[in-house]
Amino acid sequence: MENKPAITSKGRYQLKYRGTACLNCRHPLNLSDKYCPNCSQANSTKKLTIKDFFDEFFSNIVSYDSKLLKTLSALLIRPGKITRDYVDGKRMSYTNPFRFLLSLAIIYFLIQNFSGNFSEWDKYGVDKQGSQVDFQGPFGLKLDVEDEDKEEAIQVLDSLQISEQLDRVVIYRDSLIMVDPHTHFASLKNLDFSNRFYTKAEFFNTLIRKDTVYTLKDAMGKYQIPESFENKMSFGAASGFVRASRQPGSFISSLISKLPFAVFFFLPIFTLFIWLVYIRKKYNYTDHLIFSFHNTSLLFILLIISYLIDSVFNVSSNWIFITLFSIYLLQSMRKFYQQGAFKTIVKYLFLNAIFFILALFGVVFLLAGNIFTY
Image 1 (cartoon, rainbow, N blue to C red):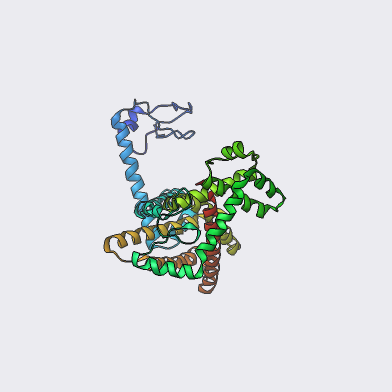
Image 2 (spheres, one colour; image 1 turned 90 degrees about the vertical axis):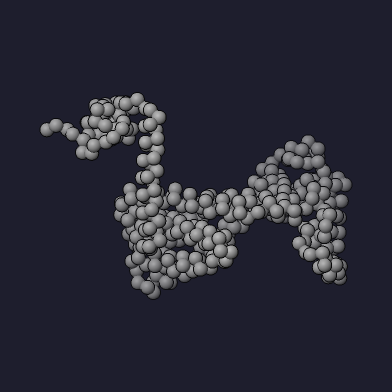
């Protein structure tokens, strides 16, 4: 029987351009093979043209859009169904859950970053000498108060003498360090690790603010400070903290730019608890992870919609969409895992408690990590 293609293709995939061997891996092909079954390269001997590039580009866009629309409709209308379909093997109709979530997270945090005007916060940072031209609060941070309130605020602080006492402590500490930095640093080696690390960070903080020290190599050359992992870490913490205090807006902007990737470190850890809660179910860890990706994707979709509504109508709708997501998540858990209402509610409350605890630790680690790398 003659081997004919099942579907008539256009452009460079027409029958007359089909080959009998893959041009990439030389795997034998039939005329009905649009792609090589061995390496997936298109079975076409036609020379590429600009028209071919544009045809494939737009066909891929249409294909992606159809998947995108189906994914969005399944997420918004049928809680839990998209995950069940994906786990059951119906995957070609939907977008990849990992890429979809990553795209949404990047879009949402980019919107927050560009619309947040965080650069304006830099004017509240301390200057290079750690002092302020305008009204100073504790630790040298400038307080955002109106002119008519400054006098009253100054009187309150003067009565408590908080700012003066803190300034005296910082000035005294800095003066002790700058008298003989090398000897002061050498005296820290007898402290235990936690105190030593914190005190070293204070030491480097003073050098950065009071002296022309920009890198650990500067401190090593000027004050004979040894190069070690602990010294690098403590210097990194001090340097990041100084820069963050000088430019708090830029620090927040840098922090937000890392959040999309932090989500993908956080969700796999949280999924471990989902797997433990539903350990008797037939699903494996990857199935639970896909469930997490899909529901987190919906959360970002709702947050983006909420942001657009707030921007257009000048209202605050976050609480509405967070409430809708909470209801949606409960329904999604019940339909995907197919358990009764009582069991689902108990597990829902437990997992939400775990989520917020992990999120709290995640924020702390992210802040610390951003200071070290800022």
